[in-house]
Image (cartoon, rainbow, N blue to C red):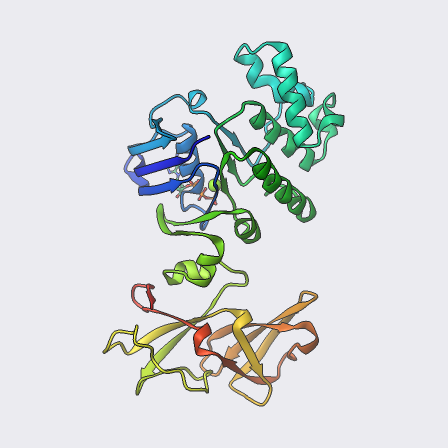
Length: 352
Ligand SMILES: Nc1ncnc2c1ncn2[C@@H]1O[C@H](COP(=O)(O)OP(=O)(O)OP(=O)(O)O)[C@@H](O)[C@H]1O
Ligand SMILES: [Mg+2]
């Protein structure tokens, strides 16, 4: 088994550069998740590792081997895509064994590997079926099985669950996590789904415009983001941001009524600062009247209230369902200084 190393990797399509010199170390056996807005380069980076996109500059290593310009089939990686791309005229077993058959592997060996993979993925009873007689989740399991039988050192997943309905996604998420525990291979996984990223990853890589914003364990990114972008990207609903003035050593905003002293991390002379606070870290003060409750959403155990502050800023507050604020009423908020984060309004960098 092996890790993956990217060294100053760059991707250009003609004049357009989409990956800007990425350095990244993925450990042997690690589950690494790429997240970031649409178009930030997640798939491109994954396809560069797979060898499906030429790397313009820099190097890619799988273990100690440099693979930058190596043929995809020789890299020891297997990729699972969003669309399963199964052969409709082949059975599940034939689909799973197809790659091995093309490589001239003996039939007995193919059968053994298909049996083993279908055991892991609970596909045994479907081996003789054609893809059209399977559900979406079962088809995606076949696509994963096709990757497993190749015995890759590194698995690459590009949003493998995004075509599945919510319930199946949860089921498959757990199965992929179990698969990782069982076979222990290095896995790199692209997703848009916050919950997948938070629950599956050993390490999350947050990308933006072809650059890495931050790399870290899920809870480290959540609790201790380096900048406003990561703070706003990790966590759902997203962190609230308020543009505040600094007046007489206090962080001030019309919705904040309690004292919020400027910490030592804020450079002298700064007159404005962006305050970040998560929806779950704001307490509603029923006796206050600095905010209007614009809308409430009940999700079951919790609810979210969308507030408008007197100067027109928006805030989302998490409340217990049985204490939900009433739409149209006025309330105040209270926040604890240690739950807030401050960012430089110009650079977005965390002030800490
Ligand atoms: N063949 C190409 N020529 C020029 N630009 C391209 C080409 N393929 C991709 N790009 C650009 O590269 C950037 C990264 O695309 P990529 O598909 O990696 O994004 P992504 O993060 O996977 O997005 P999504 O979340 O929507 O899948 C995008 O701005 C895209 O327009
Ligand atoms: Mg993509």
